[in-house]
Figure 1 (cartoon, helix red, strand yellow):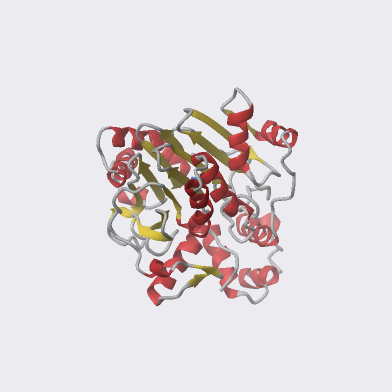
Figure 2: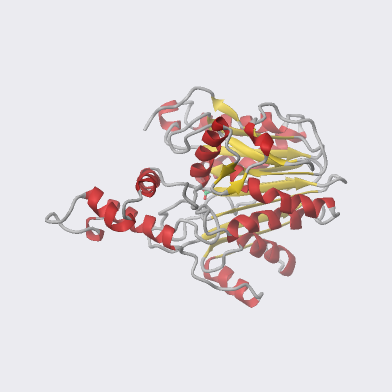
Length: 379
Ligand code: GLY
């Protein structure tokens, strides 16, 4: 098994590993009870921390902080920092898949429930820990959002290390995308065909070639949202991402948008998202979900309501809706959690949709409720 992963690649492998009863995915241990992905949302319990599935191996870090009485924002930022630091996860931070120019651009946001504050950064280059940078914007400035080179310079001034965020894995996938999308970035008609060109980039690694072909055909928007409620009922959340792969430089998705990719109300709960951020921005999904919970919906039903609004934007046209995928995740003040995905199984993210939870005993996976329940075979 390869050591590198994209969120969807991770999920596929989790699903197949779960089916096979395998205890490891990408050399990371999966808790024994992950073999039985839970189907029903658990009863409320505090403290609680949840994330998208690619945070499973990092939730212990956040739970340790919660158990020691640490701040909920420190817990969620510490959790996603593990994933941002990981060169083998190409959805966030170091090693994220780059923009169309081969430059990794990161977005992140945080909300701190007890003090009702927020921080956000977008289109940040050369700094890997953008969730902590968003937290620093919140704590050290009177701004909420800083973008682009201003965010990078702010980070450097605050002591963040500058580095090249493009790993060899991500550079090669980007080169393959360039070759597939531009006649100028591949040899002329007198040259070897596509498969041979892939072999020139990846050698005989068929798994990497298949992965490259998939992310070229369906540019991913891998992300990690993470939210926590402590024993007292205080709540915080963060969302961090490298955004849409091969994007136009400067494209910003939902992750750094307070009220879309991340939202917290300390009286109610928190919500976050992964998937096609443009669809979430149009319905202010994070805020919508928290408002639905305020009016009595469970976290799962509130996530489904956000998906219903996205479906409504396309008049329920499944053909159009099948061109993208999106997930919502939520917790409430009582420590209940839920998540929902637009599709049960989408060609861009094969395998069942799952998310990661830690309720103080052990990190495990739970199944997302699907808005469209049938298997979608398009693509
Ligand atoms: N949801 C991440 C993005 O669209 O950038």
